[in-house]
Image (cartoon, rainbow, N blue to C red; front, side, top):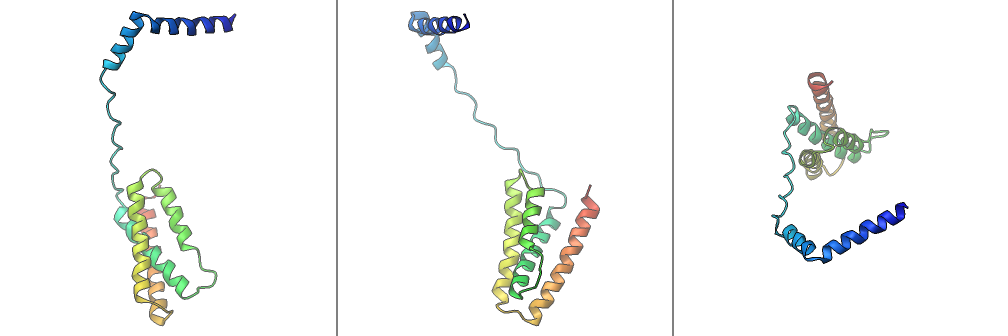
Length: 146
């Protein structure tokens, strides 16, 4: 019985579209104004700690380069740390994600352009940047953490 009712409904719809009344209603439908354009994505507002987070990203990029340059044994994967930071803090904010990624890459490239071999200066810079990164992470977590 349900099958017959379904077929009857389809037949009625088909027939009504073929009649002059059906033709008028389809003309009326095409005369309606087009739907409004999709809403622009919400503007991303910077987090109050974005400046510190950008600096931390740059520091992580610098450390990544310097640790690889000097072949640090059992070094933490700083690139993975950066990826976790991006995933947790910029999941639905592509522009913020781009800014943090650019900062990481800037830190990496800055030291790549200066240090081509592991020297005492590179080791000292890596140590200082690790300390700065730890300080920034502590400040961000202490001030803005949940």
